Image: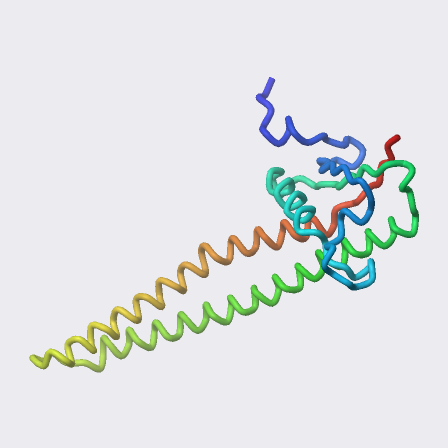
Length: 188
């Protein structure tokens, strides 16, 4: 029998939905909301502690698995209108996070293109437009242009092979949180 992985020991698996469950016990619906946000409940921010717990739990579970979030609330606090408002606030929060990530991805693509073009420009100038000279100032400028070109080229490769991958994984994580089903369970 295969050895169970860490996340399989901690999180329950729901056979019906074929997803792992992130379970959260709440005293009230308001525990999910940020106390400092004066907006109506549907548009309120999610509490940082709740968000951190959901994100950290989701990061434990590999991205190729689906997740569902189960919120345990005392039975005497059951309120269908608050339930609907919480679902709306949750979806709005992660939709906004996805939109911010999309903007960041576009900015990264622009920066990556800029880094590449500037690297090519500096390396071309350094290679073709400077002749051997005994003047120390021109030698320093020549070396500075080459170093600048290599630095921008390094940034280009870092963005293409590392930053883009991290951002893509973060997008997949937030997308999975946005797509997660939220279930309410009421306890005595």
